[in-house]
Length: 126
Ligand code: SF4
Image 1: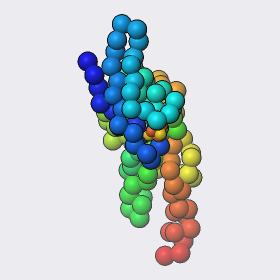
Image 2 (image 1 turned 180 degrees about the vertical axis):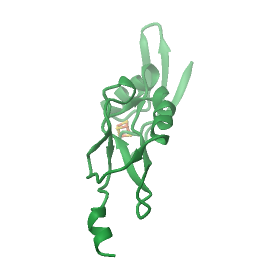
Image 3 (image 1 turned 90 degrees about the horizontal axis):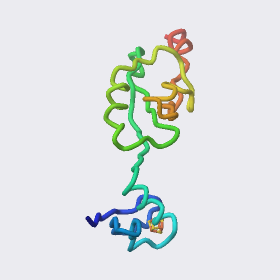
Image 4 (image 1 turned 120 degrees about the vertical axis):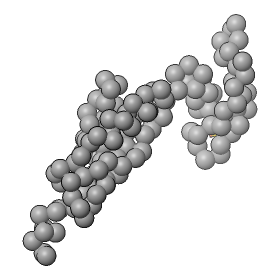
């Protein structure tokens, strides 16, 4: 079966068609090799980055943005979101600090994508 894919590797957004054949995967519409590789991965083992927020215990900053440091298998994104739903950050973190190591045994870490300000100083200034 033919699958239509919009390449997300670069902003050009090529419209690609990919189809499994007896000889492998036929890819058309890609302007470069990276698009070919993306289409093949989409047909075999699609992966995605995950960007979201997790809650904190600090009323001044109730959520902090987080993301994956590599890509997760697409079929695990919902499971990862369920885990992140139950996370509560209770200490100061800096950008790129690991919030969850090796989520779902994938080797992928969930990391902070911004600093959580020094809340000790915030409290002292009040
Ligand atoms: S196929 Fe190549 S040029 Fe086209 S969107 Fe993908 S990476 Fe960009």
